[in-house]
Image 1: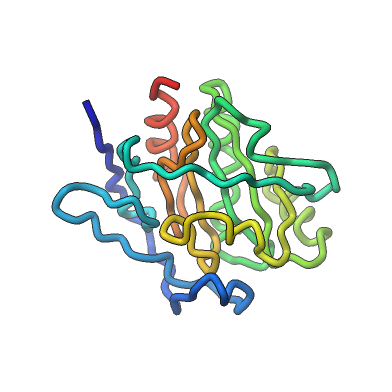
Image 2: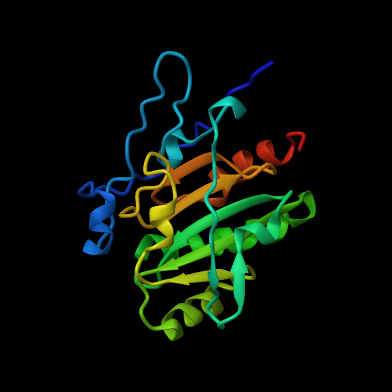
Length: 204
């Protein structure tokens, strides 16, 4: 039987101008996308943290292949975590909401690791890796982040689930490699943890 799980904790919404994939490098933080749940339950689309929900498995799309060099020049990829739940967080050192959510993500990543949950960052629009590395040190991020200064990796995701102009963004990928939840804009650990745990409890 299908189940649709919801999170209803409120969070301030980052507002701005919507962009298309072709305007990835326009800069700034933009509207994360539509959040209408509709009469039949949550749609498979990007949401704010206030309306984020775990999608029904039948409505989930496959996550794209994501791979590259991390901030230290080592290889990192989503495929490394096959069979685990993966929280993909898109961030930049220049992004104030990213700084605001980073400490919470660091704490949550350690707390759910024993449940088979891993975190993977995608660092975008940081031309200089040194600024990104300093961000990681300042916030104690213990998970790898792929360096994607031009935002090329973001274009691989379904645009309905990841607006490349909405930074930060967070996706939860289930154990079968499907996107189970998509959040555009900042999220707190209190808002993200229930979504992550619900996906982690699913059978693989």
